[in-house]
Image 1: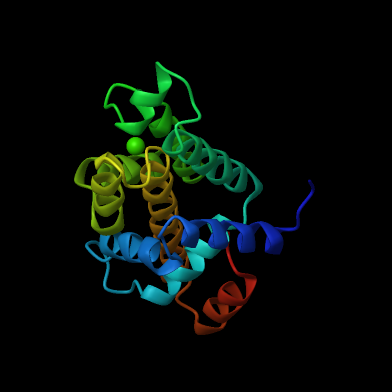
Image 2: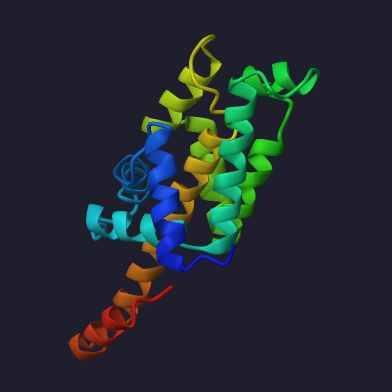
Length: 184
Ligand SMILES: [Ca+2]
């Protein structure tokens, strides 16, 4: 049960692909959110941040459990009254958002605010998951749309924090050291 961070990252990426989502899909959401505020943001930073977040143990548990609930709902194994609530991603349910807040909360209040923005505006892959999940006969993405949005929000916040650190260090030598330190 005690997987290494590399193993958890690998299992998370595999599971996301099974559920039609790539690391790049999530990184694009982070990039879109953060590039509004700064020109210094790159897609590479966003991809790297998404991978970092996907390797955390608590994110591993939230993603794996959330998708498992989606799958059970999709296969009709979960009984009523929860089956319909989950299959329709009922707006007043809110436990899926709780999973999202837990992930985004790793990056403080800003992380949670960024998740709120993604949750309301549903950019890119989040919109697709939300729409597909509500359509009968398609996959259930009740938990996944929030989890994906939250990983994007966490990645976006992490990239912003890292770039602020880099800005703070004007000295090119310090800049290089900080990059090598791989700031969390
Ligand atoms: Ca949802």
